[in-house]
Length: 426
Image 1 (cartoon, rainbow, N blue to C red):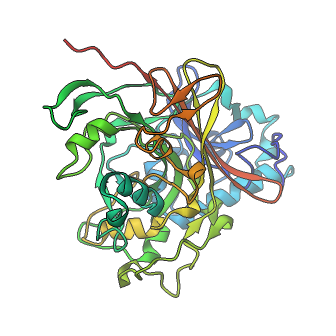
Image 2 (cartoon, rainbow, N blue to C red; image 1 turned 45 degrees about the horizontal axis):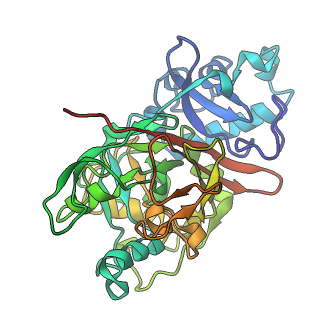
Image 3 (cartoon, rainbow, N blue to C red; image 1 turned 30 degrees about the vertical axis):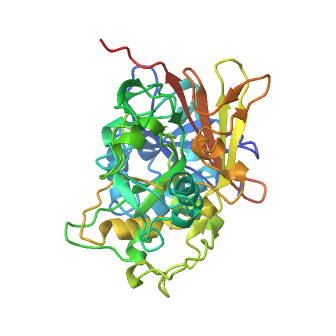
C-alpha cells in the first residue's frame, strides 16, 4: 500500500501504515483534529465534509473532528477507530477514490506540519504513572537499598503506580523551569530550599484510555485491550533530590509534578499491531486477573525502538544518551490498565497512563541519567570536554521512537523539552 496523495519518504515516521492523530491549529484558527501523513497534516473536518466517513454508523465525523481535543473520538471505541483508519488508507492510496475526485490538489485537505502549531491531543482528566520496568526498578533499588533488597516485595506481583498531576502535562516543545523545593543534600543537616541540583529525564511511553468504564466496574484483560486508544512518547521530568527527601511515605509529589512532556501525535494500537512481541517472562506467575486469557493475544509487548538525545547548552550538537525498547517492559500496557481498574476505579476517555522509565539490560539502554551516572558518581562524557551527571539549565532533551516495518516506519515524531533556570523567589 502506497500513499498517492502526497510523497512519503521510506524513513518518515508517518507512513500510510501509521496515521496517528493529533490536535493542530494554523494561524488564528481554532485547534482541530488532524492526522499525520509524511510531512503533512490531514484536516479531518475537511475530509468529513467530502463525505469520507459518512457511512460509519455512530460517528458524527464533522462534529467530532472539529473538536479541540480527541476525547470524544477516543470514547467511540475500536470498531469506529478501525473504520476511520480503513477509509483514510483507501483515500490516501487510491487515486480514483470518489472523495479524491472532489478536490483539485492535496492542499485542499492537507497542510505542511511545519506550518502548524501542535496542542495536547486530549483533555487529560487524570494522569497515572507506573513503574513497570524491572531493570529500572532494580537499578534504582540497588543504588538506595543494596543488591539484596533492590526490588520491594510487591514489585513482581503487581504494577506499581502513583497518581500524577494532569495539569502539568505539556505538549512537546514546551519549555519548563527547573523546580524549587526542599532537599537534604547533607543527611546530617536540616533540609534546605532552592532549585533542584539533580534534575533528570525519564524515558517513558504513555497510553490514552478510550471508552470509559463505570465506577465499580473492573476490567478484564480482553476489555483492557479494547480500551487503549493509542500511545505517545513521554518524558517524566524528575527532580531527584526533591523526590528523595519527600517521597516517604506517600510517594512522588513535587519532585515530579512540575512538568511531564508528551509527544503530540497519538499512534493507535491498530498501527502498532504488527509489532507485537512476547513480554518478558513473569516470575512468579501473576494472579489470575493479570494473566493473559485464551482469547487475548499472548504477545502483550511491543517492539518500539526508543532513543534519548541531549543537546548541552555549551554546544549545538545532540548526543545520544539512551537507546532502549518498549519490549523490555515487565508489566504490559493491558496489565497496567486492568490493575488500575480492578478495584472499580473509573477510567475515563482521555486519561493518560505512563509506563514508568523504560530501561533495558545494558548500560546504553538505561532510561535516566540517575542510572547512567549511577546517582551522580560516574560523569557522562558528551564530547569536547562536556560532561553531565544531571541536566543543566538550558539543556535540551529529545526523545524519539519508531517501529521498523518492511520498507516503512510507524513512528512517534519527537518529544522535546528545554530546561530553563529556576524562578527566583524572594
